[in-house]
Length: 231
Image 1 (spheres, one colour):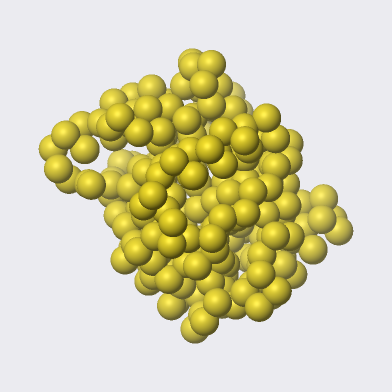
Image 2: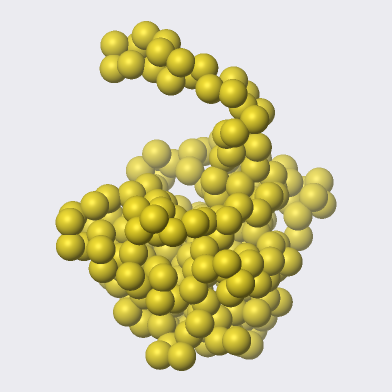
């Protein structure tokens, strides 16, 4: 089975309050993006399409050349678009022609395990589309624009969705073609597949598979490293 990954690292990360884009912030003495990429070395993924801001591609290339642990992976580099959806779409254009399963992952989720990546690949190959997530722990309220509580849905049916998300390649390509045809926007790739009327399976993810979005996330990630809860 030929498996490629599109790793999206084109965001500016304004919520971090840093001039440095999030993928290049230091985590445990290494750029965050290298932690993420190293997780794919031990997985079934053979090729990574790294989508970054055009101005940062040369920095990505240099970082990867400097890390001998990434040598078993094939990398290609693609500049991102104005939205995450645009960036993924451009990344899909760089997949191998014989790619059967594509894994989409956030470049700022540095602790995903190779085992979870491979579970996604196998599930996607069999079922077509899969996301990972964890059950919500807090009570969720549906709130109106004027901050009035409208509904309290049962937590039993609510999951916090993460990446990786994995798909049979032809299914995801079709989803993006349809989205481009009617200007649909989605907050994750699975939403576009759902719009086709296709089923998306769910795998339980990992609580340590955090996304670095705000300064406190980086502090938590450093704590996980120091405690030995991730490597």
